[in-house]
Amino acid sequence: MGYFKEKYDAIIIGGALAGMSCALSLAKNGKDVLILERHNLPGGLTTSFVRGGMEMEATLHEMMSIGPKEMPLKIRQFLEEMNVMVDWLRVPEAYRISVPKENIDITLHAGFTGSVKNDIFIPGEFTMAHEIDEKYPNTFKEVNRFMNLCAEVYNSVNVLSDSSMSKLQMLLKHQGLVRTAGYSTEEVLKSFDLPSEVIDILKAYWIYVGSPFSELPFTIYAFLMADYFIGGSYVCKEFSHELSLRMQEACEEMNVQYEYGQDVDKILVRDGHVYGVKTKRGDIIYSNYVACSAYPNTCYGRMIEPINSVPKEAYQNTNARKMGVSVVSVVLILDKTPEELNIHDYSVFSSESNMDLDKFFEQGKTLGPYDYLTTICLNYANPSCVKEGYTSLSITYLPSPLAFLDITDLNYHEIKRKMAFDMIKTISDHLGVNLFDHIIEIEIEMPHTVAHYTSNFLGGIYGYQHSMEDHVVARLMMADGENYIKGLAFCGAHAISGDGMAPAISNGRKAAKTLLDQMDTEGK
Image (cartoon, rainbow, N blue to C red; front, side, top):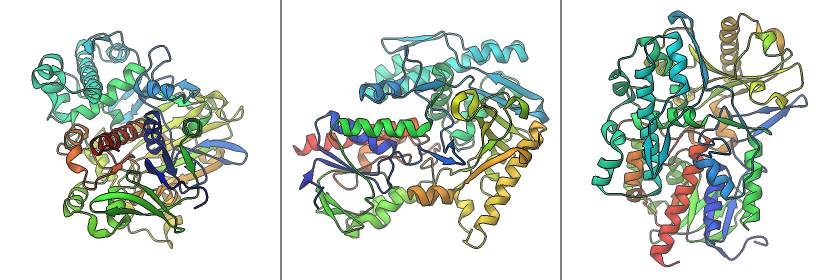
């Protein structure tokens, strides 16, 4: 117990982005915080690795909610407020989508002339609406109207996440959100008079939310589309590990105690209230408030002590939620320049069949092959990411982790290599270049990789699947009712916002607010 205090205001289980943003928010409010991290590095999946003397990005494709320095979006604002200074590099385009069977091949860029004044959204023109109109004449007005609706909903969600208002104010100031709430993305898209090819172009980002459009609430899709196309997307110059290191340094600057190699085994509960944690090596550390990065499935299933402190409602709620996606990603270093390999864009979504999202989603319940893949060529956002004359390329699909449950240690490597081979061949055929001839380093990431490295339940990366019944707005409304154990909050991709690194940071901030509110109520 030499390096632990007698008691802390709050303990954070897990030092990934959500855990660190939670700790920073608590420390900013004068709380004495301890982070317990099982690894010897911060950041969880926000990391990189070195193979053959070259650093390779592990996970980050593009970070949302950053925005340019002169017009920062909410995550950049929060990070800079916490003195987390990252060298952000803007990604050159939003995406290129290539679907040969539908004769679709177009590259779209971020850019918007509208604005927000006094929390009121003012419409403008989107660059991508002009780009689509160039290929599909007479579509500008309708595409731009659709994107302005996305932007209006985006603004409303940002306003409502920071404040409360009456139903009358909602109706007066946030008509777009009120009008589309309760509708799926598919329903809203179909209400616009657009050619099927244009609708398919607007579907490209679906893989980053992990739900078919028939089940995805429009609010989620609108937020993602507006964020990417208004503020653009960004990567870290020193790979995503830079973000983890800068956040960890900021934690220490704010006197957060960050301890590595500390695997928490139990969350201790007495009379329905947290009173501490127990590590796997036997240390008992006291605090009345804990933010847990482990999935509720894991937390309620085996971490609460005594286990009968978990009410049946907690099990029912957790079991009712569907697992979101995991990842299969092939990370490559290639011995030619991108141009020599016929790679000309940073982010490409490509499909070897028609843009049938329901079909792609069903493919994700299998071990492949997958028709719809996303490739990221880091050279185009960060030219210094690899030695001159080389290419850093990743090929990714986000399948359901449930497809991988029957894999054993006897067939794991065979299946992993077969899946990677299929993905590389698909992209090789798409490019007209045999990538196999140019591989000098390769890593294959699977759900098992995630589960082993982070202990994420089933190797999930996006928490629970968004659906028409269970999405960020509904979760926000029900959040207080899900505080089943006093003093316990959850932070991570599985929490309210779900999906990705920026939402993980938002989830950490929300967890901090939950604990601060409880502290105020209980007079702590």
